[in-house]
Image (cartoon, rainbow over all chains, first blue to last red):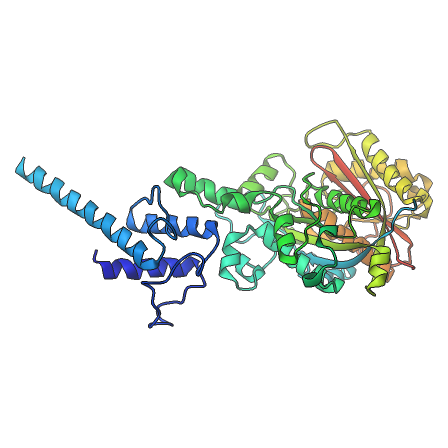
Length: 104
Length: 417
C-alpha cells in the first residue's frame, strides 16, 4: 500500500467522524497534509479515541503509546507517515519471513 | 417561612402518539394510541408490538450525524422533549441570571440499553480493545440530565433518579422539593426511556409483564379492563420546566399549572409484584395529599399508573379505594390511564403523565382510558372509559409505581394566580 493510498483512506476515515474536516470531493485544494487534528478539527478526546480505533481497524495496526493528534502525529500528514512506516515495516517483516520459509 | 410555590412554565413530550405537546394532547383528547408492530429488531419476540416513535436517531438529532452517533436513543428523546419545554418556557438560557440556580433532574428507568447490547456484541466478536469510547457516556443513566444541562448551560443541581417506572415522577418530585426549599429557582425535569431493544423485549417478556395480544396490538393496552394481559412497552420522554412562582411572574411567563404535593414510599415486598395490602401505595398518595394540604374528596382527577397488567390495575384500584373511600366508589373521582394510548414508557411515564395531568386541569378535559370494553369486578371505579370527558377540576394526582416497590405520587393544581 503506497503513501498516497494510505492518505486517501486516512482522510476518508477522519471525514466520516470528524465533521469539521472538509470532504475531499468538495474541497480538492484543502491542505490535508499540514492540517493539525487538535484543536482545529476536534478538541474532544472521545473523538480522537474513536477515529484512532477506526484507523487501527482499517490498517491493522495499534497506536500503542501514542495517539493521533499528539506524540508526533499532530497533523494528518504525520498520521499518514506513522501508518506508512508501520505498514512498510510490517510488509518488510512479512517478506523476510516468507523468504526465510522458502529457503528452509 | 412560607413555602415557595412551584409552577410549570414549559412542557415537552415525545410519545408514540404525539411528537409534540400539541400532537400528544390532541391524541389523548381523541383517544388515539400509537401502538403498532415493532420495527428494527433483529430477533423474533414473544410480543411483536410496542409504542415506537417513528423517528430514527439521526432525525431526533436534527440530521446532525455526529450528535446522532454520540448519544443513546434515550438521550435523543430527552433532548427533543427538553427543547420543546425550553422553547415553551420562553427562558433566555443564553443569559441565565444565575445558572447555578437552574437544576436538571432527568432520569431513566434503564438507560442506554441499546448501546450496551451493541457494544457487548463488539466485545464478544472483536475483543475488549474494540469497544467504543462512547459506550460509557452513552449508556450511563445520568447522561440525559448531563446532556440537557450542557445544551442549556444549567449549572445547578444535576442528577438522575432511577426508580423503574416511577423515575419521572421521582425526578419531578425532587426538583419540586429543591425549588420549594429555596435551593434553586428553576428546573428542567422529567423522564426518558428507549427500552425497545432485543434485550429489553426479552427481559420483560421473560417475567411475563408484556401483553402478547399480537393479533390486535391496537387494543392491547387496556388498563382496568377484565381482559388485560400485560403492559405495552413504549419509548418516549416527558420533560417539564418548573419554576418558583415569583420568578415566573417576574419574567411574565405563561403558567400551565402548579405542583403542590409529592409523596413517595417503598413497598418493601417483592422485586416485581405490588404488595397486595397496598399499604405503601396508600401511604404514598396520602403523603402527597397531605403535602398538598387537600382532602381526598377535593381531588377531581387521578392519572393512574394503570399499566394494563393484571396485578397492577387490581392493586392500584385497591389502594385508590383505601385512600379515597366513597369519593372513589361513588364515582365522583375520575380516574384514567393514559398508558392505554401511549403504552408504558417506564422511566418516562412520570414526565409524560405529569403533562397529561396538567393539560387536563388547564383545559378541563379528562383524557380517557381507551380499549375499556369488559368491566372487571375487581376494578370497579370510574376509569373515564373510551372517550374524553369535559370536567373542570381543581386538583389532579399522578401515580407511578415501579418494579422494586417504588411508589411516587404528584399532586397538581389548576393555576389560578
